Image 1 (cartoon, one colour):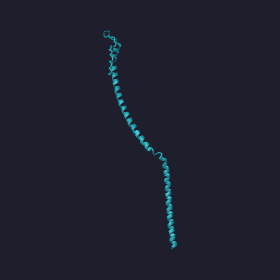
Image 2 (cartoon, helix red, strand yellow):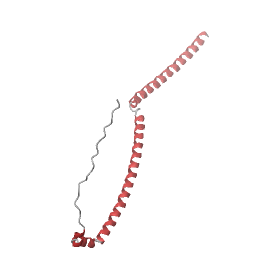
Image 3 (cartoon, helix red, strand yellow):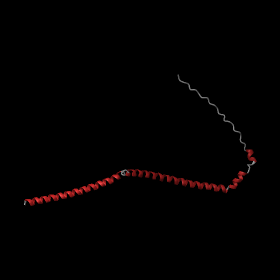
Image 4 (spheres, one colour):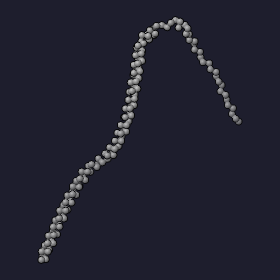
Length: 141
């Protein structure tokens, strides 16, 4: 009977040893899998600073976008002002061309002789300014 009990205990221990060996193998496989994963992720570690760079670039992009919106607004204002000035210039050109024959007659004819005689311009005389002498300040002694 002792032998049977000892055999049963031995079987039980062997069974436990086998279960523990399987557990060890399973854990070793898990460790190896995790080690491979760590090795793969090490390659991506160098890319970890891209998030910060992306945030910085996003901020710069937003600033540039705001600057361009302002610039575009100024452009629209200048374009509107340019269009208004073009309309005014065309109006003046139309007026000038509608009165062109009057301007041609005025500019091509000689001024009347009476106008030339009556309007004599006196010769320009030099300015006569009085020279002021500088007063000397008396020093207190």
